[in-house]
Length: 349
Image 1 (cartoon, rainbow, N blue to C red):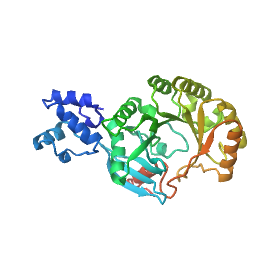
Image 2 (cartoon, rainbow, N blue to C red):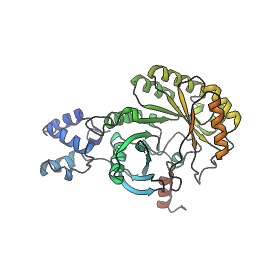
Image 3 (cartoon, rainbow, N blue to C red):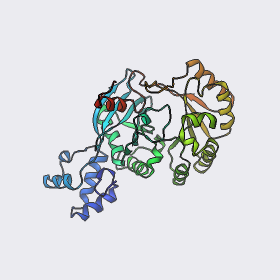
């Protein structure tokens, strides 16, 4: 963030910035509430501010945010938003409806540098990290577009959240602020492909969120092929820090496991995974992947997923299959951005 990025400021920082610019401190509270409580992202709509002040704020503290570029709605009610970010390029988020409320899958970076072989986000390439304010605007705009109150957040969209550590930590502080959306930390999940040093740093903060670890393989041989990060932090190192994390935080870890036909979905893979996770405070979330044209991987059959689940459960590991939402739209993170970028470059979509 910059010292003028008002969307990414805490109330204290905003108050100090206003005072430095000879603006009364109480105005900061008004602006903060407009942005983070009322979700107003245009100074002209902040009607309790003098017109001259609105003009001054627009000049000195422009509201840097995403803007809606596209929207898809699936037959099951899932909504996929495509946002244009300042400076060009696009990010995506997905709003999913459940019995307990509406959950949003938020992007933390423009593209991704982790290089996971089955992921659409990495195909489009990495451009930059998102600011806290840009991440917040994904949620604010989605809530305004759908008219749905967002109750749960999943940091599992484009990008690796722990690669954007400082900005994500600030985003979490702002989105859980009682003067803003006031979303409970327990209603937030943060996903990582396995950046061990950052997991240790997260552990120190003892946040009551859910840590989701994208495992996707039971051994180094398979994981090395599909997830380059494993060559830096192998499964043994990753599982060790996960055990340490659960011991320090008393929070259960969710292991994400994308079921890839003929790659990681055999009975032997299930038995090996069960043996490595047995006794850990964890849950395995098996994911029937959405097909991506540019990817050589295909989803496992329902029968294979069912057999894999049963082996894990018999092996003493809590495992469920993620409900597949948005299958009739570009539901995988990165797909919509990929299509838009191709279209703008004159490629086939």
